[in-house]
Image (tube, rainbow, N blue to C red; front, top):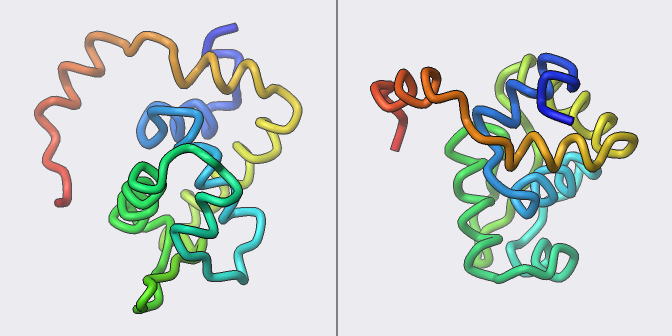
Length: 127
């Protein structure tokens, strides 16, 4: 099924922030234990993709204000969205992912809306 079968907040979160299942798994791992600070190696030990990719995901989620960091070494990350709507969208995504995993994965890999992709090309992003 396409992303339109998902709740709007979940579909929007995926469309805007999630490009891979690995990325979603990293976010949901930290979401599941919001009191804990994680190193990139600890996240890698659970996710088991690649260390550099996990670190890049953590850095991106920090820049997008899903995570806060604690200086290191090693640097540590904790789930702490700055915006309430991000927090509620991730909460809902975590719930939906437990029940409708395939739908969520399909939404991640669904072709982008060409009009939205064109419009997104002109958005300024934080770097």
